[in-house]
Length: 353
Image 1: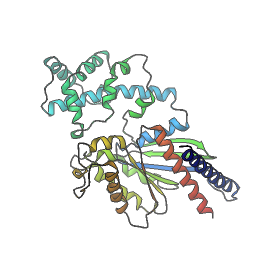
Image 2: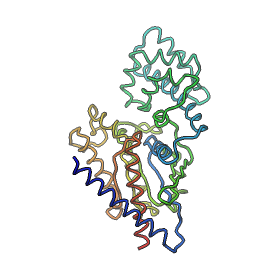
Image 3: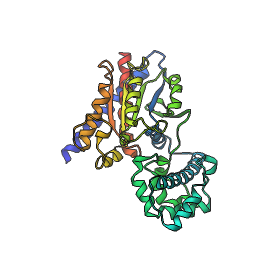
Image 4: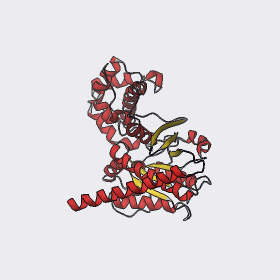
């Protein structure tokens, strides 16, 4: 054990020295080097891009401002109402049976329109949500969430409905990371690290948002492409006959082979690993890739998906680095970002040599 730890320390020290050397070289470079490094993060809707950006705020900006926390609190409460509404609709669609009392409650709840203005969490709705979520039919339909559109984080919000509804509720980091706000337009986080300003640019991943992407392709230091592995059996929100993983694979090829990124490193984040591993126990990868003949072993499945993504582009687009991630795991995201940062700085050094 001691030997392993000492080796890790030596490797870490060596890496720190290497990065310091790069930084010193960049500082001494007489050219007008732009001190801002731009990282563009792309992927389909619900891939976890925005969670990655939130993690950058946690790691490098001391979390969230009071104004942001209040906005997230309101969003989490609306998420709670929206999640309940989706589950009640699914119970009805799947012909499951709520208790007689809860059937009346559900009918009342279904009168809510799934619009932001109608999703405010009132005292009445709080009581309805808590009672409905206690019904076994609601739990049963949540287990079938792969058959309709609802975030995996919905259960944890519903389990904590009482806390979330309280007047003095302050969102936890986990609640903020788990809340759902579809990205429209551009979300940016800027922070300083290693004598550089880092700008993380997140552009909406829904199909309607992608036409805006090209406006952000210039002067990018590195591309981060996020894939939600756990969505291999799900359909697009916008088009119910299109598999989400297949959509992500096609989009990846379009992006990586774009002229702006041919010479850029691409960090391919295989996200939602925890959910993917759990789902593989009951749903075969074959539902997405008919030619998959492997087992439900997570490593074997990830290796197969990796080959699919790498083989989708020509050899000349070879600067692709694959990481496994769980967006809500701050420690893991920090390690991934350190590797991304190292790759960016090394790329700059190579350009200067």
